[in-house]
Image (cartoon, rainbow, N blue to C red; front, side):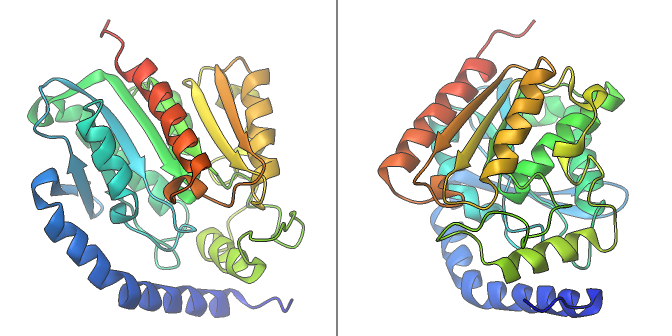
Amino acid sequence: MKILTAEQYQRKGRRFHKVEKFFSGPMYALMKKRNASLRKEVFVETGKNKIRTVWYGLNNPAPSPLLIDLHGGGFILGSPEMDEKMNIAWSLDPGFRIVSIDYPKAPDYPFPHAVEQIYDVVEYIFDHAGEYGVDTQRVAIGGHSAGANLATVTCMKAKSTEKIRFVCQFLNCPPLDLATTALEKPHPRGSIPRKMSFIFDNCYLNGADGRHPYISPVYAHSEDLKGLPPALIIVAGRDSLHEEGVLYYNKLSENGVNVQLLDYPGGLHCFMLKQSVISRDAFDKASSFLQQHLQQESV
């Protein structure tokens, strides 16, 4: 496979943006119209940017537990609407408040923009918890694919600041080793095309050290991992990210984190967002995990 320059990868990344907007725009517009009564857009001023967020479950009794959702898309694509069906389900039963963050995307906003601005939005939510009916003693964070990477990185950043505490983290098919190229990773049938992975990773890194723990959590030191909130990690056997998910599970476990691993040998990347028997099983188990931690009485 031909390796391109940074500028060439960035141009390809921007083309992805255009293609996504063309094909997904009408579908997302229809979803917004259909689900208008179940969702609310809130634009958060972080001091650096205005970040779009989508809230679900604002009509639930307050103060309520909150799940912060981070969508996937290889750090360069995607929007909260990708996770809307799942988020609406969780907002209705068991009745969480949910905020899905439309974080800034590469290549225009490479690392560390998303990491920093997600944390700023989370901090804003904690500072305005009363306004949004959020119980700050019962806040979880989770994500899918790139969003799962950003979720666990946000947990590490929160631990380092000691201002924000999450009760648990939910990681669905996370990319956790961006220092290892797509050519060096397994490539089972049906996994993300290597060329696409190269574009995603290069646009997000933009020359940064791929072994930075806030880029590739598998390289985090023990002091970064000890004391992280309980975690549920979902991995798929037909996903090139399978091994790094298992490695991160082992690292969390070795550092005393209460962590569970759900391994689906026949699953494709982020299968949980599709309709299948194993996606229903993963959804039910993730729901139980979140309920276990979010429905505990506040201390």
